Image (cartoon, rainbow, N blue to C red):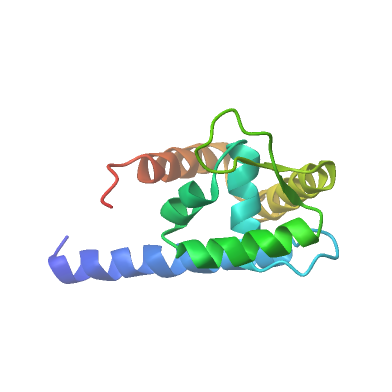
Length: 144
C-alpha cells in the first residue's frame, strides 16, 4: 500500500471513530438529563474507575481542570455524581450516585443495542475480527 492510500485509510478511521462516538453517545442520552458528550464521557470514566479524581479526568480527556470542574458541578447538581469519602487528603474521589449508576447502565444497554443493530448483518467471523482489531487499536502504544 502506498503512503497516500495509507493516509486516506487513516483519515477514514479517524472520521469514523469520531462519528461513531458522537452519534452513539448522542443516541444514548441519560434519560431526560441534558448531558453533553463530555458529560457522558466523564460519567463513563467515573463508572469504570470509582474513586477517580477530577485531575485524573482532566488528564484522561486532555481537558482543562476548570472545564472538568464545571462539568462535575453540573453532574453533581443533576444528582448523577458525588464526592466519595476520601481516605487521604489528595484530591476528592468521585463516584456515581444510585441514579448515576442506573443511568450509566441504561446508557450502556442503549449503546449495546445500537452496536448490535449495526452488526446484525455481519457474520460471526466479521464481528470477531472487528472486535479483535478495535481492541488491538485501543491497546496499542500510548503516544501521548
